[in-house]
Image 1 (spheres, rainbow, N blue to C red):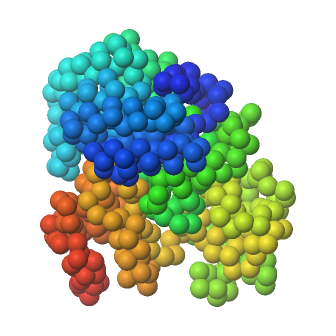
Image 2 (image 1 turned 120 degrees about the vertical axis):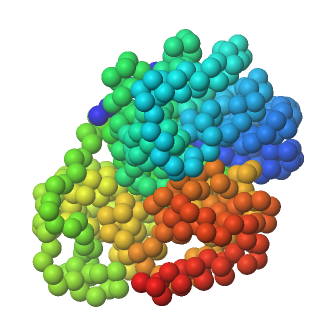
Image 3 (image 1 turned 60 degrees about the vertical axis):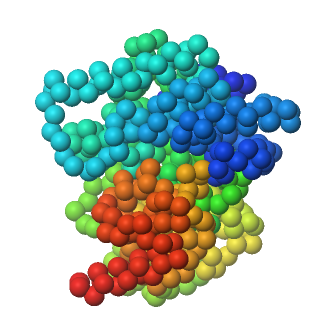
Length: 507
């Protein structure tokens, strides 16, 4: 699958076609704090960000984008700005007059917050809902047309509407349909300056939803640029690995015109990671001359449980370093390009890298190898390196790649969003505390979310959630159910641990 998008213009920035893959990030400051927002925008731009997104959750925040933009232009920065909108069409209509791009979420722009309650609609009722959505979008489309403002139709797995989830489920297909419905409305009004995105905290869902979207767009003669990202990748090496695995898979297939690596860290730290992913795939542009076709999922009646092979002692090892003595299923390992050598050990993927920096090795290996394990292909993984990174670090990296692609879960997965202006507490500190308190757990997913925009939806696949509510307050979730609401932040970690321990005691 190779998708050739059209070129669009966002202020001084062009993207799509054969242009280089563009890199962007989002501020985590209060948009009403002009000085802090301007300073952070400048740090993102100086790090190499080509577009900066700011949240505009209300009218005042949207209006203040004009002040932020004025200060940036006064300082000599012409990088385009994007307003991030959820739930508030009025804020989008104001922002569209002030900045170069507006991102809207089909799951909550014209629909209410998802309640996760099934509501079956007749075909007539469903079409009436689409008509209502079109009427709600028309003012924004007109404003953007007059002002030359670009629009991103940004679908999140965590915030699909009840209408979509009832008919399609919380699925990749549902995500793609949600986007296509909005794209049809914009195209019907002659508006072409569009970008579209399918995001999830799950690499397989993110990859599959983008593939379905591209097939749907091609079927309808659409060529809009695609923005890639894992929504709540987390922080540290794990956040980098899961981002590289998902984004790298699609860039390898020729899908993706702009990317954001969403880390629970300072946003300027996202830019070098994004650049490294692009470089790992196809040099500085990230454009594959001959994109690889998508790998088909391996069909097997057996449970897929890839092993990690240790060159040091010539054995397959489990996550604790013990020799794995069971028989290893073998498959035909696909030839790997992008590293200096590649070997086959009974269906085990064995790439050989030459890297001295562990962080770069994490990104490069994940970018190149993620697609194989997302597709559930090889029976195992052995990473070899000619550089300084050796021994246990390579084994840990191999298990991290399997964990990121959910090919083999060997420890707790932490789903945490990048902070933004909607965040109600210190998210980075909360993630560190929760990791420290739950690191002994295995095979569990814990979501740490700064606000309720994506929280409940992204937690559909998580066991527990810690989600920002009002200032200094946290909701504690079990799955998508908020079992404790407005817990004081000082007490929230203890309450989460009590819930986990109580549930485990009943099992």
